[in-house]
Image (cartoon, rainbow, N blue to C red; front, side, top):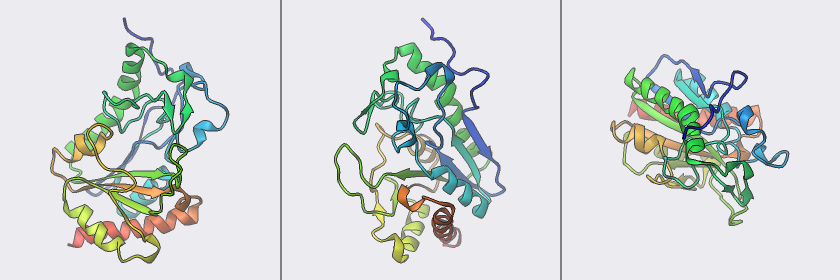
Length: 249
């Protein structure tokens, strides 16, 4: 049995693309908070989707600023990670999360066809666009994310202003680490913090970067460092300088 179409004429396209002239590709898997009209408010209380559970606050602003500085191509995904998490594989329990950081998501009790509709109409188009850009010549990939200073689920303080994630040694990760370790306000730099790249909980890096042996990194910026345009510009300047270290190394 097939599910009804998820997206309708009034819904935004899942994929946002900013063309660049160089061989850098930036991805933003959790860029937006859009919810298809067919799903209503997912059963959430007002304002819940605006929290870190619904998207990566500041990540799209940061990626757009970086793309402008580096003349990079940007591929971003507009729908809330509570609709479908575009950095999760099909088998992941939180691909369509029933609960996120202790918050229940009533609208995510879905059938298998409904889950597949979210995959086919949102997840797949985003990653098809990423693959297309790599096929067209992008040779370095940076996945841009933000994270909350403290999660409800454990209450632990997460002290890293910036985290760099990669499980395969590569020149981009190495060059960015060298540069950022010398920047005072970045201390402590998170190396594979606050997360690690894993097949069960990541998609972009394992599927697109590692098989092609491309220089890559997943950047996590603590979202309180991205609260306004001035803060975003500061982080973007710092990360762009780190990017350039890889180009000249």
